[in-house]
Length: 59
Image 1 (spheres, rainbow, N blue to C red):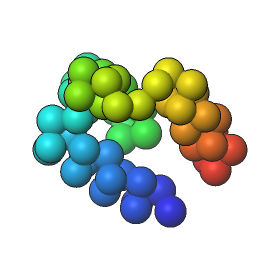
Image 2: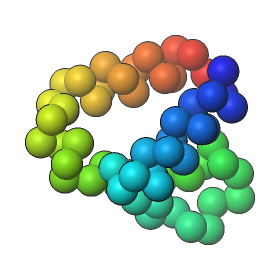
Image 3: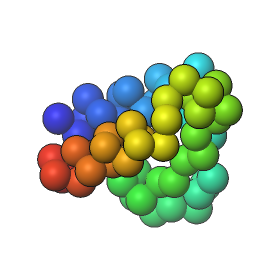
């Protein structure tokens, strides 16, 4: 499941939806990303918080 999630994150970064802000992270699961404006316009903060909560439950 984590490999699948990593693939989605990589695709979102390639499409410009995410921007890596922690280039010095030692592990892939420590990477931090900036959510680009295009997503902010489409997805509310509440939806992002719910997504974050679900991710934390799965890990």
